[in-house]
Amino acid sequence: MNTQATFRLGFKRYRISVQNEILSGLTVALALVPEALAFSFVAGVEPLVGLYAAFMVGLLAAIFGGRPGMISGATGAMAVVMVSLVALHGVEYLFAAVVLTGILQILAGVFRLGKFIRIVPYPVMLGFVNGLAIVIFLAQLQHFQIDADGVKQWMGSQALLVFSGLVALTMAIIHFLPKITRAIPASLAAIVVVSLLVIGFSIDTKTVGDLASIKGGLPQFHIPDVAFTWATLKIIFPYAVILAAIGLIESLLTLSLIDEVTDTRGSSNRECVGQGIANTATGLFGGMGGCAMIGQSMINVNSGGRKRLSGIAAALFLLSFILFASDLIERIPMVALVGVMFMVVLGTFEWSSVRIFKKIPRHDFFVLVLVSSVTVVTDLAVAVIVGVIVSALVFAWEHAKHIHAKTYINEHGSKVYELVGPLFFGSVKNFHDLFSPADDPADVIIEFQQSRVTDHSAIEAIDSLAVRYIRRGKKLHLRYLSDDCKLLLDKAGDLVEVNRLEDPTYHVADDKLD
View 1 (cartoon, rainbow, N blue to C red):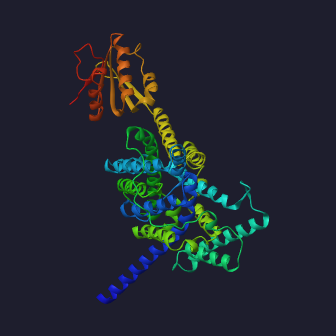
View 2 (cartoon, helix red, strand yellow; view 1 turned 120 degrees about the horizontal axis):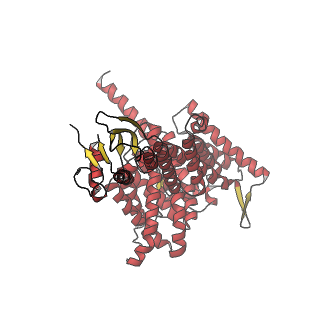
View 3 (cartoon, one colour; view 1 turned 90 degrees about the vertical axis):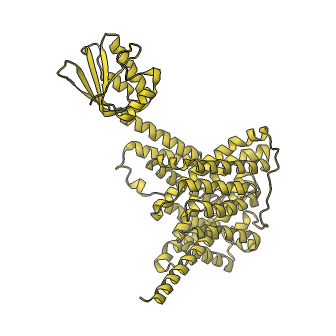
């Protein structure tokens, strides 16, 4: 193949890639509108506050974040925290809290705290994904309801049948179109086809405009109108910490999910900084802040968006809707967007977790269900924290049962305990049960060749065991300690000393063998 042909092929691939990114961004932007409006209502702020957040956070996180192809914007997980701050102190305090949230997130990235997302166990990840899929599904059910004299009730049978049928049509297009062509994102094609069908046949159904008007101007730079005092900081700081934590947890877990889907790897620390920049700027431009959105990220990835361009395009399309195309966007029927979100639910939920529940340990399945349930009932941050804690406790319980010892009498008449398994807070009781100071000979050796001293509880266990032997006039020696175990014991100071056999003040001796 000559140089000219190679260039043409490369340019064609580049053009197709750019086309896919832009069309994917347009699809995401259309799905962002009702989400931003809904979350602004949840937070108790004006619709444009949510739309500006979706634009600013989406744009800046796409540029500076650590996961190309991931979509960020206003989210419900953060909105539910904001509502009490807005109700008690007003929207200006919210803007100040969002700015502080961004600063805290930047610091998290600078100090490389993003790596701690690695401690989230896989069952917690599955629970997070499944729980969020259920939350997205439940959020769509409100569109099957109407407001009758301030009371939400289900649509009448005919209206419900029409609405459900159009949702089903949207889902069918998204499912079957890729089998025919991938020239245009299936979600975008479904939105366009269903919208034209509804408008062309004058079908009476809910539209985006029924939620609120999206018409507005450019976001304006605005320093939050609050007193820069210690009293203000005491009000906004707790909210900022919670918002920063929720935003980073949801963003980093979504990053991990997109990594898995695309078989690539993003940068968690860079994502922390990117989210921080986005929220800091958003608070200074009258937005409610936000984080990564798993639903929109999945729409983007499934529509072919893999680069930063798709996220940038989504944000710019959203801004153009606000500035120039509000009347057109407000005519889009909600059935199309609900259908798109239902397909996101089907694609997000880990169906394999249902099939393998009999093949994985029961405690892992329990954690999976627990995290899913807590995500639905409370919020994502609480669910993940609960899941990590429960997983850690289960891990400790399981490993606490693994400690045991092999015993024998050596040629010098000393009884040797070959300890097997980790010595830590969870295994302390089992450790004590291994020894019989009253029955043992005058000289006892504990070998740590197949064990590790891991924490303060382990040090105390060794020390108290030594006391039991000393009270009976017997000696206790430790040997084959690893370097890290020796360091841990040395750092204990007066709690235990391992290197001074001649000092009666100290209880434990350490035999350093050649």
